[in-house]
Length: 456
View 1 (cartoon, one colour):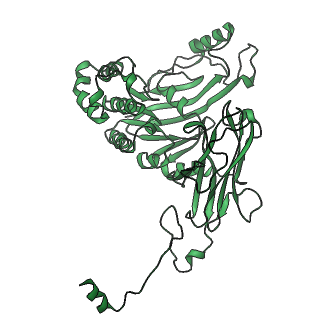
View 2 (tube, helix red, strand yellow):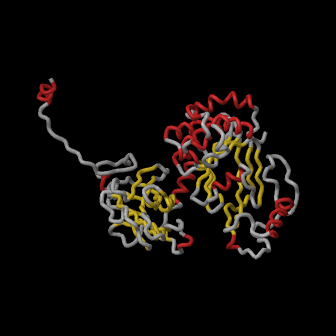
View 3 (cartoon, one colour):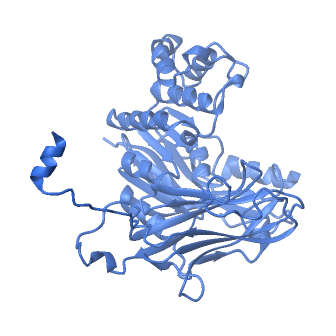
């Protein structure tokens, strides 16, 4: 028996930049004709034959005056299969094509070329509030989602109490969901998607909105679904969750599969790809740099005393400097820089910013309006603090106190190597993510009998 439930064959997805739709009538007709005559039906199930027909070249452009620069490929020649009961992790940097892939699998959008075949009922959780009508109550939305999934009302009713209990929104179940917080939205949406017995569940990063306790509950539920023979695809930037939950992972880069295998190995490959031999990432063209009309990144660098220029290989005993250079494009904007630091398995080690409450030094630009121009912020990580190993930097630039403008995940990595100084009296590997030199003091309390007398 064929246990394959998802087949993705040479799938590509192309978007035209700067327009909604295609822009011209002739282009609309070209796209319609390609859909009718040139592409396999993306809704075909596994085992069904596609109607034989010619296909427009993947790299061909319709004759509408558009050039190659007017298009971008979100996915390019993707091929893989997923078997029944697999829990598959899909990882990659922002813009790698992860969300586009899930939208194609859930039939929100169609591929430009290639075949996608699915066997089984799909439930998708692609963003906060997916599948919910804001004017309806939580109760009504549960019933609506059950109907959308093809379940009878009695089947949904049988699961109703379990869904509400899992979500923890009992008190608000008869309130319109437009009044829910984002966390409540996600809790109810996941509870609905996971409990209405889909054969395939697609989850895209939305669990990041929930609290830690609920995230653990969701991870447990997804693991249980795999043991029950249902298939789960998870997109996440949380590498520990991917490793713990998914036996297998796929790594996407620029819309292509660059690794497919055991989750722990794929995650390590992903994190290692962020390493720059020169210890820096520079965007010389502002138009291509991460950011928006307010602020754009220019460079992220790793520096260390005694080394001329950026480096990705740092000594454990010396201070590490993380330098973020960014261009302010809005006169008077109040900006703040921040970083997240993760270890080689994606575990969060620390986060820091130049805010007065968390910075050891007072940054003269914190809280002040910034003139238009280039700014350079440096975060200092003490020597003898991080343990040896690979670490990744996420660079952040925000506006005001909480509005994130740039979040460039895993933008750069560096390797901390041991000097051997702390192995003179201890030859094993040091436990932990951090390895600081801490203050110790031992005092003599007198002979043992004196100590006993004191205790008595």
